[in-house]
Image (cartoon, rainbow, N blue to C red; front, side, top):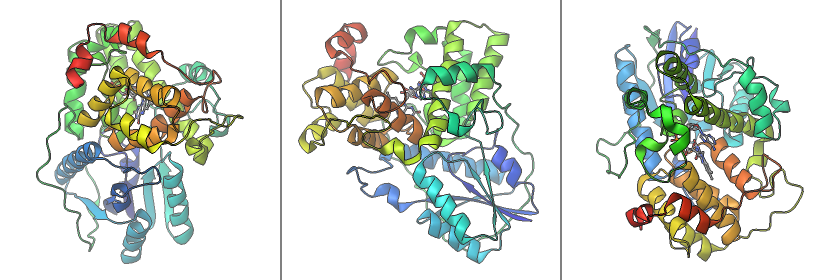
Length: 414
Ligand SMILES: Cc1cc2nc3c(=O)[nH]c(=O)nc-3n(C[C@H](O)[C@H](O)[C@H](O)COP(=O)(O)OP(=O)(O)OC[C@H]3O[C@@H](n4cnc5c(N)ncnc54)[C@H](O)[C@@H]3O)c2cc1C
């Protein structure tokens, strides 16, 4: 059998069930598609892929390609609209099956459905590589994912996540494709920040995080606005797929057994369950994830105000703490969870803006952008998504006193 593995947010060899499944073939091609639409202005006036994440993705692609060479393979990187790029490959080579990781965004899901319709001769296999659970171990069917995180968490904590699997030691022979390889940039712009894409960098980061016992006081410091050590900083590697969530959970359990288990190590798991919840919720609600009113029965009142939005994006509002957050985001591609909550709450409540444009700006700027977590968290704060508590309004003066009493965070970024 000839298999095509279309790699997306699964850029790794370790704990990659899609790769193992695809490797059950006589011949195999691994392909990654760079979509020019990522770099064109979208309906929210921003790019889907900003320069921070693009740098990280390119690093991850290079790292993966180099790891594949050790197994006698290459990652074939092509450019084009995904439907066309994949269709061209399927016309050139008679693949019997196409393997792809489960996607959670409605556009990505539509695309796969369309490809399936146009290529009925190809067997499509969709594999859960991105989440702790797969369809079988998920504690409820996708259609029954609860409206609130707490309900999901209660059930999820009683269920067992899928155990991680080791990387393959061999791969079947490589199918040769006659196509122009997308040129990855040899030199990169240097941004402030410590994120470097790739499985090897993810591994180093994990070793450092656990090796320095940082999980032991995670719960006490996770809300701090600055500080590399104050939260795990795993999100970018998890979302580009350089590190699997199951492997991350395995590291937490390992650490708890070999070193120490406390409320903080447990809380890291609780946060991974938030990530999990948003994925399956996105799958359940589909395009509703991007709807202004979300699942709320009331119309969302905020309006699109180009000038106010531009000030917010650039960090030029009347709220210094929010400005500092936005400037950190713009300079580094990262912002702490509390910083994201404050920035989102400001756009929604103080500026009465349309939350979707804020989510669009985050999509462009974040290295760790994830469709389900980003749009799901925005809906949550806007009060139109998960959780019936009617949104979140953070008191910025109070938050400034708690999280930046000495002004060091503002001085750092303003
Ligand atoms: C408005 C807004 C937008 C967000 N957009 C994204 C996004 O695009 N991608 C993204 O991964 N996270 C997003 N988050 C969630 C959260 O802010 C980040 O996951 C977190 O800050 C990443 O840093 P960390 O890895 O150090 O997190 P840690 O605090 O160390 O948490 C460990 C892991 O748990 C998961 N996690 C933690 N908090 C959340 C949460 N609230 N929702 C979902 N998963 C969570 C992440 O995978 C994270 O890596 C958003 C939050 C808000 C309020």
